[in-house]
Length: 405
Image 1 (cartoon, rainbow, N blue to C red):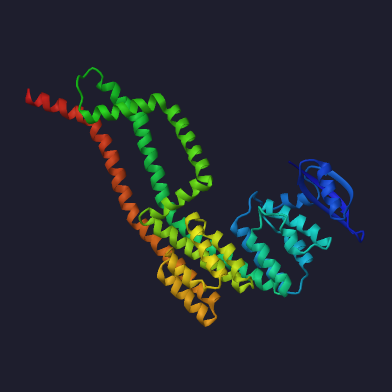
Image 2 (image 1 turned 120 degrees about the vertical axis):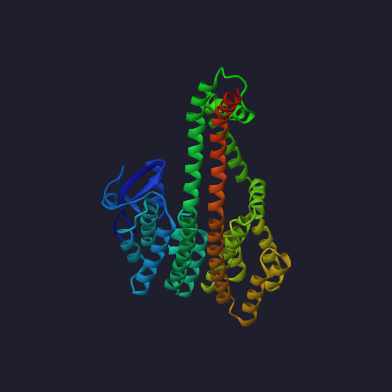
């Protein structure tokens, strides 16, 4: 794939400059002509509009921060009376994600040819999810585009905040694990071989010392093989997890892990409630909203159970009834949803559910870290202590022998 910069004229003769990625120049020319654009010039490489991008800090991928800021700024501009086309043009001047910038530049061109915003962003599934498409489509149909974009921005902001809480809580334990494993590796790979050379010819050594030295010798002589084998196993496991059956088994295993499984379930509930509530407030039908919200759980086991809930809803049953029967969520969830359905405030009650579980996740993660840190320190201390004792046992043995003699 190559990036081409081009100049085209639209159907009313207005000159448009932009850039796009394509396999060949001919392929890009055909795609522009299909949109009713007349190609004036085209060159391979970054020029024109791309120079503006190099003058500010950019990164390649699109993250939640980029999407949240984009949705919120677009909502603000539309609420101020700015047209969609003008708003997109303004935002392309300050986007810091290279992938999002390229998508918005193409969206801008499509909007100038009369394409709706929903259809324009549908061309970029790597940037905009199905949730974006459905909400924007509803917003354009109802004239509430700014409102649904603000709701989407709030949703992304809350998701980002929750993710940062979890990551922040797990940083210290992760660093502790890495440092501890590295320390043990250095001890096994560098220090123990020194002791092994000293102890040669001293006769029979204690069983623990022999075992540690044997493992160290194996690691020293076969480290490359161990790394290659670990990489192969990791690659094979990753491939298997990407299969339908493998993903389902892995997701089921995660739910059964003590403490961690509860956190994973709470995360799935929070995502489901948050996305479903936001979609309903945006005017999406309950069945269509369920379709999107089910995928937000990111767990195949829960997705299959929720699909059965959706089928029951399509048959005319309220969500709370099959949800309670399936038993995939705690009774609190189905009870609150039942209250929301009875009072006609389902979206608001779903928001309350998501807020409750967001706090629940934060509490559980903090509790897990509180329990994990001292446990890890004890385990690492025992591991390193065992290695040290194993190396000094022959010395203690010799000292005892000399003392007895």
